[in-house]
Image (cartoon, rainbow, N blue to C red; front, top):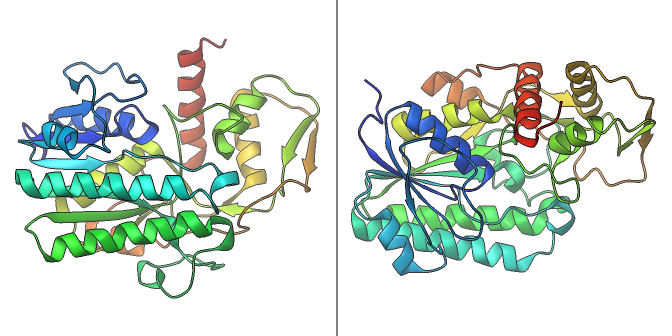
Amino acid sequence: MSFFEGKKVVVTGGSGFLGSNYIEGLVKRGANVFTHIHQRPLQTKVEGLNVMPYCDLTSLDDCMKLIDGADYVIHSGGNIAHPSTVPTDIQISIQNINVLGNVLDACNKTGVKRILDLNSSTGYPDRRYPITEDEYWDDEPYKAYYGYGWMRRYREKLMEHVSKFSNLEIMLTRGTAIFGPYDNFDTKSCHVVPALINRVLTDENPFTAWGSPDVVRDFLYVEDVVNASLLVLEKGVSMRPYNVGMGKTITIGEILESILKATGKNPDIVWDNSKPTTIPFRMVSTERITSELGFEPQYTFDQGIEKTIKWYKEHYGIH
């Protein structure tokens, strides 16, 4: 029997990329899933979902109505910063912290047992090796993510404070780069994997790739992110952060090669090094979540790309 079988689990941000995938993962595990609609309609068409038709997470009253009676809450609601606005977007930082505060307050007041928060590896300092959870506060966040990175750190301090003065158990993960179904594929605002998939499928030739092919990232397919996160929610230790990643590096050049192989495209590639690349190396150590909780990714990067492209074609009617 699944840990989540028959449990009421609230997913904030259910219209978004991660929220949509959390919902589907929880329904498969037999949970009684509740979510809400605010500015965007739901993307997932999964059956048996309970939806609050309008809920503004900046309103504590709305948060209380959504969360009341829940066993567990997965907080994935909030604004995600585009790389070009990360260092300076004060509004995003303030709103995300305020929303988290409302969700935590509602959890505490309604007697929720446990909440899961997927924080971001953008809060880490610049390191050129797999960085561990204990190094989070060793230096300032990397300059390209400076403001957004500090916001992510402030969120953890807020959660630490709440955990000390309440009975709420707070499960904390720090995610690496994520890709998969329900991601944003708008090339004006999306991240590297959906942008490359979108552009490759439009048959650009020559294909101009932004930045350097040697930039290193750690990408994890979203279904594996869900599996890791739910494992932390079930078996993790309150306020003990767990990095969530593949645990292997991949370059932007290799990402493009994987997408070209999966689509059967073969354009001439031109790398435009005048475009920004944010941080040249980002990878998290996954030793803690592997050794303590037994997490192992189910999908290789190439398998995740194949599944993402298949979903993208079906979702947008591309043949």
